[in-house]
Length: 239
Image (cartoon, rainbow, N blue to C red; front, side, top):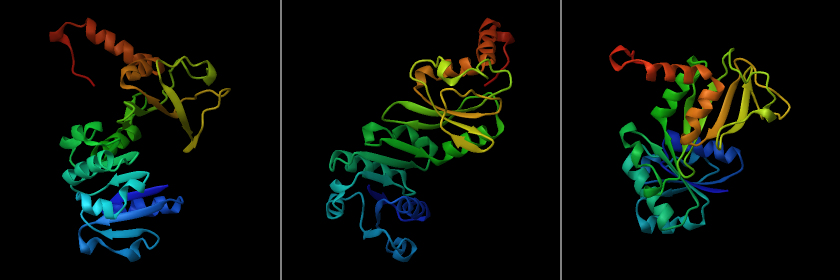
């Protein structure tokens, strides 16, 4: 796969090294001469250019790439490049780095971004994932498909423990994609069953996320029902 990475800073170079190790062809683009450190990623191609200029992208033959990753520290640059990559050069897949949480709402298909990667949101989600049991945590949002990657650590009182995975009636379009047990991730086995403290990963649309949480942890629904039945003045604030 041919991948162009805009932004040859620490983030861009790290992504390039990882993708090269996985057998992909990489072009790094940056407009700052000081960022062109070819010796740091010798197996990548390098281009000193402005990735928001059409002439530069034509020189890079952007239309021959499978994926474009906008990984600079400037959200404006990442948005403009993603829009040009998608609309002018027809790059099939675009990934945009979100630096400022307040700009996250713009990183969608209207700006040519297929997948938005928000570092602040991901760090927050990983902190939540590390300390919570029985709470559904959203790790990642797939913009193009309007689906989320969510994680939950199974509590000991979940009613689905011990039920064969093939018999789980997951709501809507929810799909169980991985089970992490004792620190080891594995594909779910149809004849296997979930155990307490398993970390489970699902891909699910936002419309079915709450139903999934209530199925795995009925206490979530119970708390919700109790809150709705409590007079507004008597309610406690909870998340």
